Length: 183
Image (cartoon, rainbow, N blue to C red; front, side):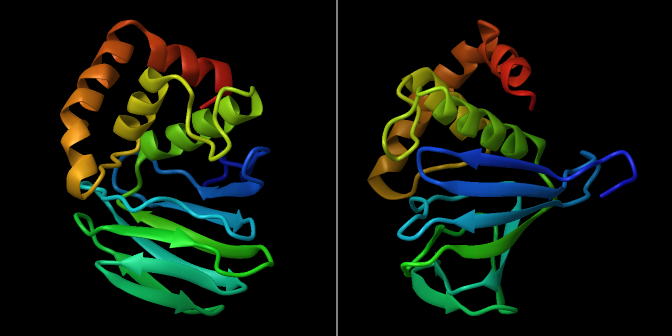
């Protein structure tokens, strides 16, 4: 982190995850670096990013990953990278919390903002039990902000979701959420 950046930790009270921003991108190619504490049984759904690679490094516990159709278990100190365009997701296969680092190269401000907004929506009771926004416009906006795409048949929804995200931006929803949640 630069001298002007302080680590910021956000907690999702719905899914019990914690994210610490160790480094936020300067928008000029520097990485985004996060440390995530993932609750037992937690994880995300398979997805693709088109503009950045993600390197996952286990810190504490065993981190489960699926990258390009291959299932992995990373032990502390082990890393793997999901290259842009590769279907991937992470999960906690244990009954204990897992801590891992994620480095986005290049860093991605939209991804950073989408996490902050998504966790804020969860804290405000505006998500379901899996922490997906109840408002479909918010979901579309967060997917677009984070450069997250669905693979397979779910990918057929992406053009509609992109239109919804554009609508949200045009109506000022993105700026309103960024202000409200301090992203």
